[in-house]
Amino acid sequence: MRWFGVFSLAVALGACDKAVPDEELRRLREEALAANQEAVATHTGIRERTSGRTLTLSGQLGKPEARLEWRDLEALATTHVKTINPHNPADRDKRIDYRGVRVSELLDRFEAAPAADELTFVSIDGYRSTLDVAATREFPVTLAIEADGAPIDRWHGGPIYLVFPHSDEPDTLRYGGRFWSFYVTDLIVGTEPARLRVMTRAFNAMELDALPPAELDSVVAWKVQWPATSVHLVGVRVSEVLRAAGLHPAPNDRVIVRGKSSIHRDPKAPIELAAEDLERCGFLLVTRWGQNAEAVPARLGGPIALAIPPTCADRYGERFWIPFVEELQLDAAVGRSAGAPTMEGQRAP
Image (cartoon, rainbow, N blue to C red):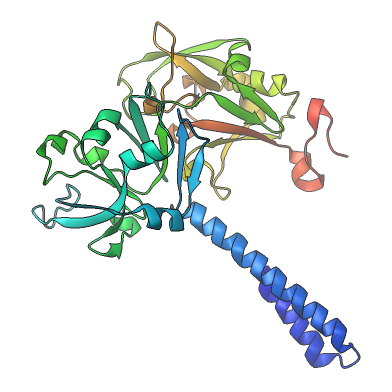
């Protein structure tokens, strides 16, 4: 790690170079310690984000979008729900004591809009579940962080696990196993406003609607809550959005698509579209669907989702159907070796 190298350098200077003044050694040591602290903080932040130990609230809120760190969740986790767990086949009758944050308390704390009647929970792996706000008001539906006094590991749905009080509130049995969301990272109240960042440019819903529209009839691969039959999808092509942002990718460039879920923001396995396929494939950013062109709600992965036309399904499979699309980034081939891409087609020398 970088901090270890810096600290080692300072030690080596002190041990081997007798000509270095004490004041200089002290300065080097202080710099090494500062770099150490900075790196530890950075890596801790990365671990927090990628391990599912944070919760982001967004959507129709009276307060700004909020990100709760683990220490915040610990402080808010005062609700206990003792219940059976449909994902515990070894002992279906065992009551587990879950400690966590009651969802209704989060809605009150961040002033959920009265008009928002649905909540969508998004997980690290892109899974989502949606339930009525009314259910969370009536019952202690809880985002649990402990089970029987111990942290919840990933294998059992943690670190943040959406649980329902089945044992004490039989009416919640209608929210079966598929609603018990593992490793939750996001809570969306209603549906967020459409926002798409493309390099340094940001598009809102009106700006996206003003671009040349595109349509597609296809069976979708977002799956959760979508019909199993072909549906009508409406939106704008990725190529049109790039042009509107003043970007003109070369054939060897690639476009990275980032969604809300950690799996769709993984730098080690990015969702990449080859620039040479943009026109041929007509990748579609879907904002509306159905014969009435209704806006795509959060329960369906909206307000923006990426669809792959059948003509390119052989190369771009289900993994590339991305819900909750938030960002496009142009990664220029020349930029990967000699600098970053620039606007209006001007390429780095």
